[in-house]
Length: 177
Image (cartoon, rainbow, N blue to C red; front, top):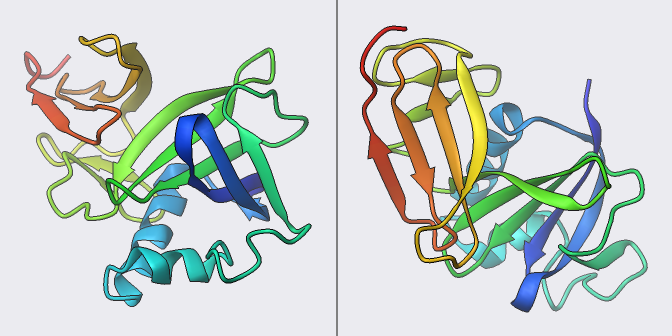
């Protein structure tokens, strides 16, 4: 069973426009679906936006499209997927206790070399093959330009960090914990 989410496109300076989805899902389920939509449209960002009626020529200015800012609190949404056109990636945001959006994870649409495989129902570490033994977190970037999204395997300790520019860094863990 899903929860209330927006799927949208990231604009300049933290703005976004998004379409409401009654049955959104956790990134383990939703990211493979978004990747499949992107691949079905020949890896074309405009085609992906058309799937969610977010094209400039489509319903972008209709009442069904929500316009917001990442610094604004959310009322009752449980997740926000934002497509980053410049980096062919997706940022997933969840509300914090004060109902402000905070980064949860980042994913490239081309996930062919991901350290963690999302298959639509589980997340698997490609280093040790552990299933659903991960932790999502964020950390300030080394340059102070925002937040990095970090996925860590709690079994072997390897981690994948994705920067705001969707550059990925990987570290290997000390082994089985």
